[in-house]
Length: 245
Image 1: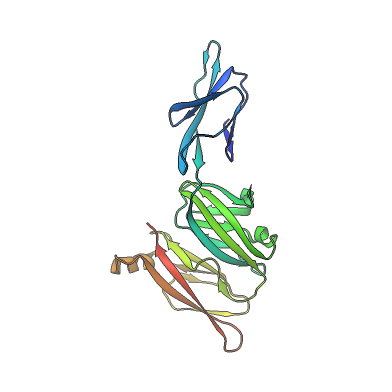
Image 2 (image 1 turned 90 degrees about the horizontal axis):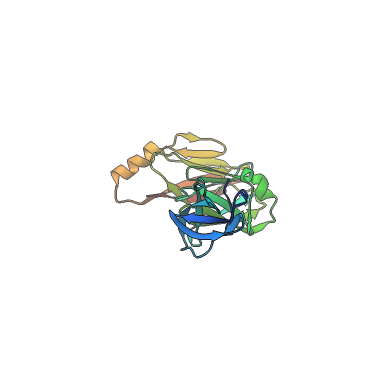
């Protein structure tokens, strides 16, 4: 029953004389309590951990293993703006995630009900963000690829705008989902899409893959999205669609 909370490993007390901490198939250390704080490990690595109980007359089998991710390096940085007037949950396309470990704000791990991950899409609930003060807020996302820093600017605005971006990472075989807040504006999208609704644009993976086939040396494409807002006022949003490896 191994559990990891930040850097602390805990397990059920089996009243053993001591416990062996196995890391990546070797005995790393022994302890007498049913907990261990990870130390003396190389940073920006992922480790396989198990525990073995030691008694006077023998030892137990090693426990089932768990993964300990020890990442300290920021491998990606993103910025996006969230309006407290929005009806959308913010959605951000990340370059790589692998296994999601945690989402932290102000040093605390936020509850899993306040965010979700779907492939390379991170969604933080607007209810959570609306409870924050107007201004900039930093989130640290722990993944099996490393740490991702996301700066969210919380504003009180009703100006049409793209949510997330301006960089959107495209992964082959996955439709690209772009959300926007329309408020009182109208939208004009001139590109090949599967769907344009009042909340999101879905650019089909067939279309994006065809662009890559025509120009295999290209690593990104620029798309323009135009909002009509007010009397004779337009807002042009330029997004950069990057082909992720």
